[in-house]
Length: 313
Ligand SMILES: Nc1nc2c(ncn2[C@@H]2O[C@H](COP(=O)(O)OP(=O)(O)OP(=O)(O)O)[C@@H](O)[C@H]2O)c(=O)[nH]1
Image (cartoon, rainbow, N blue to C red; front, top):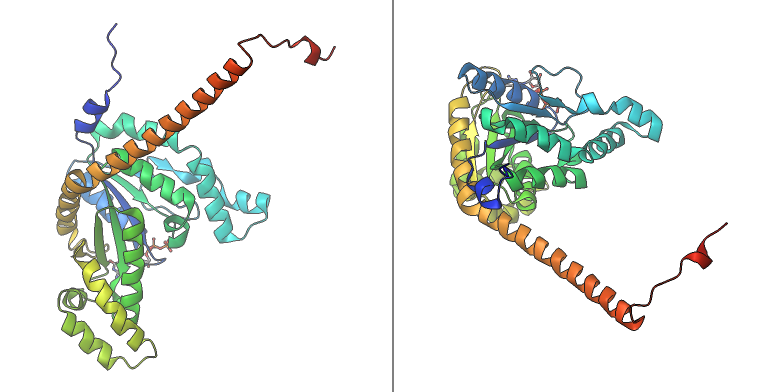
């Protein structure tokens, strides 16, 4: 019988489908965007594999291959653990994460036949971005698949320099936390074009002008922070889309392809290096434990320990 277990080399050279993690503030249009990109891939006859990680979503306008709601009922979790809505969502995500190895097995079985893996995250952004389970899910997916963050922004609600800046700072914190290729998706461009945002990101003076016009108490704080963000913008891809009309979706997928290439060239070697360090550390600890055990055996001169005295009759 031949052994079909993939070696680390064969699995790392196999082309894996890019994973798109959709993250965004409540109401930014994540679910509508997921519906749009899912429909787009189906229309191209390159269907994706879809995961829904939002336990509180009422009506999902697309079919998810794996839906957290099939595993945990967040209203029951709220009752059982006496929690409010956010605690209920977080606990449901934690419970689901304990089974994530099984989820990965399902994904792996289909990885050869799907074009992308799409992941919708809970509406309350911090539940995914600042929780241990969110980090475990992100890191586990990113260890195998070229994983890309699609950060969805509600463009019409980001036109003031203050909201724009807070949104960018939030995106910046997610970029540095996940250390993954990042696409800023300016959604709802059917209502307001994202040109102002591109201008602010590429021309520092233009953003400074906008800040000067903004007389809110935050403007001096933002003035200094905008200098920091200039460096952050270098690491981003920016696209404007409308999840409702479908405009900009082709550009979004071009950005995903580029981000997936970036993952292979820059991020994957770093992720593999971190995994090697972790495995090396575990191996060292195991070896130390073994050495301690061998020492104990030496001290007792290998004499057998009688269990008879300790047995209760
Ligand atoms: N005009 C316009 N409206 C949009 C677009 N995308 C989403 N919306 C609307 O924005 C609202 C929020 O969209 P959702 O897809 O539910 O947003 P969400 O981020 O999943 O919201 P949560 O469930 O709170 O996480 C809905 O009323 C959508 O119809 C868009 O591209 N253009």
